[in-house]
Length: 492
Image (cartoon, rainbow, N blue to C red; front, side):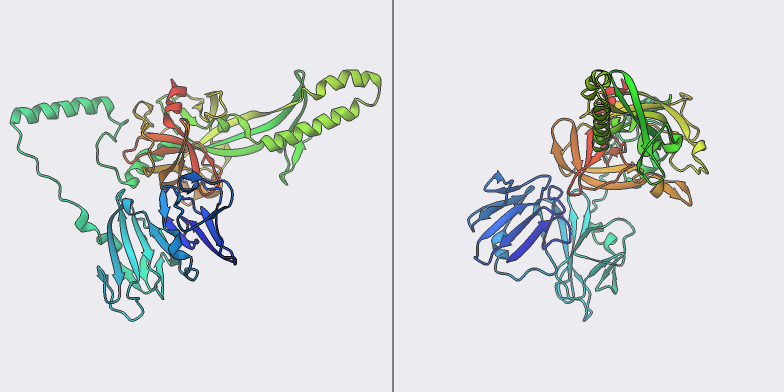
């Protein structure tokens, strides 16, 4: 049997550079009987045979049209080939703006060295501005920052070596694509003075709050530097409370080994967690996720375990005598477990702290009250912006245009203090990506994956406007975000 793995990751046999394609999207199996089957690998945007999304392994024939995400796959040509090594690179031509080939004796970029292949690699600029480097099956490989790659998006500062020896000045390759700015026609002096006056008046209204009204996208580093102090690391502590018929039965935390423990015996067992938030007002209000301000959300398995344990305990005690039976049996069906917040505080991005006592205490104001709308609101107890915070995220100028392939940037604290502690203080992590999945009216998916601690991170568009709030990680390397309008509604 022969198998061809399909997906966005360079580890696949057929690599498709399309944000709607999952990292490991599907697999084609060619059986010894020559029967060909395709199976979707729980992808986000689905695998389609003749327009029908498949949910089980499906037999296909040469006449069938296969789509993975939004990309049509010309799969038949791979059947009689040996398993591609390195992988076949498929790039959706609709997203390609310019393509440059690299080779030893031919191509747009010629490197006349014996260890460079004739058709070594290609440099691709997408319509959204991203630049990709893709190896074309070269003998000696293409390397980015010392790592051999099949295909990779390049970021400023990345070092590209052809055959792991010859540097490629990739950032200068597409300079000819940049058009010189148009020269406006001279305006009359009166018109110029009126324009200047209007600009000054508008600037006086929005100074220090909105910087993204221009049509030209901002560099990622400018978005990050503007909002650097607006992003906060949130740390909270909570415990599980067990009750029945309005009577508290017990309280649970975790011991030093991470096991559940009875808080009545160990008060130090409060459960600590971290998240991300961002300032939205001059009186120190902060938007984050509902599950950050209402701990216990997402811990259903633990809560169900505690509940079941108590139900069994009560049932056993109820059998000791008739009086106990009459008293305890009604409690069994009424047992509930809730997360109870003990405290919540923040650390500013860039601050140096030597202990948790230096965190800024906060209070929970409210949350959406709806499990699927994962937004919450807290406020620093002083009800003023901490010193050093100059900008806030303006919820009156959010971006509601959620479209596939749209460039976005996130800033947050994945893994909490574990990754945030640096020699320069507590530092947030910034990442770029694209909107890669549409899911109803509440959430959308990004094509990068984050880990715990990033919950509550803002998602900005290329103009610095809030587009969403990260709230979950799904399978296949997707990150989900709640649309920004729900944060705006909550803050009213």
